[in-house]
Amino acid sequence: MKIVTWNINGIRAYKGGIKKALQSLDADIICLQETKVTRDLLDERTAVVEGYNSYFSFSRARSGYSGVATYCKDSVAPFAAEEGLTGLLTNLEGAVGCYGDPMEFCDDELQLLDNEGRAVITQHQYMCKNQIQKVTVVNVYCPRADPEKPERKQFKLQFYKLLQSRAEAILKAGSHVIILGDVNTSHRTIDHCDPSDLDNFDEHPGRKWLNVFLSAESKSESGRENEGSSTDDVLNNGGKFIDTFRYFHPERTHAFTCWNTLTGARQTNYGTRIDYIFADVQLAKEQFTAADILPEVEGSDHCPVWAKLCCTLLASPKLPALCTRYLPEFAGKQQKLSHFLVKVDPKSMSAESRDSLPSSQEAGEKRENLKPLGAAVSSLGKKRPLAPGSGTPKGKKSNVTKTSAKLPPPQGSLLAFFKPKASSGAPILKASEASSAADPNPLPRSQKSQMDQLNHTKVVNGVCDSSTMHTSSRPLEEGTGETPRETKAEQRIAESTTAPKGPKGASLGFWKSVLHGPPPAPPCKVHRETSVLRTVKKEGPNLGRQFFVCARPQGHASNPEARCNFFAWVDMGK
Image (cartoon, rainbow, N blue to C red; front, side, top):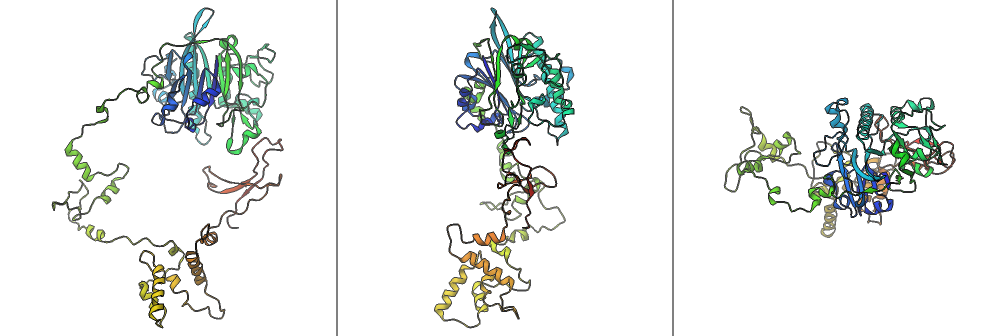
């Protein structure tokens, strides 16, 4: 049997369906994390894959977040399946059971821990020494401890505690246990590309939990079993589970499963190993034959991890109720028409049609959007009644009629923002009046009609463009012989709007003079290569600021092919 775990970082990214990816992994059980899909967004090609039966857990906290899914080949269909670790989400027959001591957590904690769709459990059977035995596969996506949110650190530790309690309870009930997925903690220093503060590395709360949860037993490359590795900083042989990768490769370095793709860290293998396949000690020693990672498989910021067992799983004749093909939207059952109809009171419906607005509007918006008094007269001549509470208070005069008579000003031209404001006492002239006022000497009728036509094109939405009509009539600056500064600006605006359209637009030069972009990227100091522009997205005083960094991918400081430490803020004043 082959089993695979992979943080897929969004299952909807596979537009043609997930079947091709499942087939390329060539495994009997495939556990995916961070599917980022909710039930309403799950499509049939992803939920029902030919040759597989699938089991999903969706985030109930927010959409496009977290989520796990387990795909099993039909030849190894599970006998039981369950969503979550607490049992609170189990209302179907065929659950796994064995929930440990519920008194360790309060009800609110249990509800929150299972609210983000982080676990799916499937239970299988296999034949060993002419006896049928059980093995339970726990697919988990452990929380990440956000350093800016202290409460998430405690949430992560509580999830670890719940995971251990449930796994040990299942193990105690007589079933072997495999825990696999994204644990979001690198265990040892060789599992991290650049461990900082080596003296306190093992003081990390997540590593402390792993030291207690895992046994340090391993098998050397030659096949000889060891009671621990010489590279271990802290050894604890009391754990009931084994990290299967380290069991077969106790001292392999640079074996990472997660990289920061935004900095190109995968190119320099600057990552961490946070994806695991854990198995109880007895199962790992008796049934596991190999375990490794697949860093060459792309498509996510994580790579798959696989393991092989010498046992062969038995197929269940009946799929568990949690299987996605039993969901009503995918089961193919005929829905009754009554399911789509709701009884509505005609009286309340008519009242709502008069007064109600979309639910996204606030109460103040509702009052503003209702028709004013005297304006909502039906075809029968009757006034439409106002919504309750929206009428004018007694003893006060209503000025609704006055406000309704005032129409908003017409949409002006964008060029009006670049013109100097006119004096308050100057009247707004029509196009014909403005042209006659600008030129005291009348022109012949033919020339005047041409000027009128030209002036007509200068009028935008009924507002006269005085910048182009008075430019020729303004005097030169005294003693300089030059056109005033304001007049030059108006001429540039007029030229940009009246010039013939080019391939990229005639106003390109004007907008470049108005909107200044960042300066040219400088070369980095070490490689003398053009740097790249980045923007600060982290909350703080520098949010939104831009800076230049070396264009090479992130890597260890000792790697000459990696990014150097060049950094420069963008000075928008230049």
